[in-house]
Image (cartoon, rainbow, N blue to C red; front, side, top):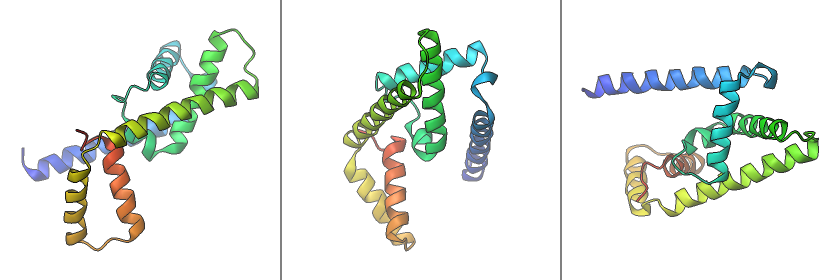
Length: 150
């Protein structure tokens, strides 16, 4: 595969992911099918178990989608539990999921090959002058993506 073909394929995957995210953001709780509820509960369970095989980068890159996912999972779980989903219970559930997500990100940071990140960031810095904010954003994205994990 040539570099041009690889880039075209990558752009197509990025467009597909953006479409899926846009459709997800347009959904309401009432729109969810049983299958979708099961899938969201599965993702929620993996977050609660701090399963770092999840795509943390997408959750990191789109905090509004992460927040919506956590609220949907909380509502589904509380509905299945047959307990009235009070705002306090929903908030606590979402807060707990966010804590587990944060733990997952921390685990990813710890498992990252910092020397590889450093070398890559030096190469990027040499090629193009970045603002400190851009530099920090790229470094965080590399780490959370897991591309340079040990």
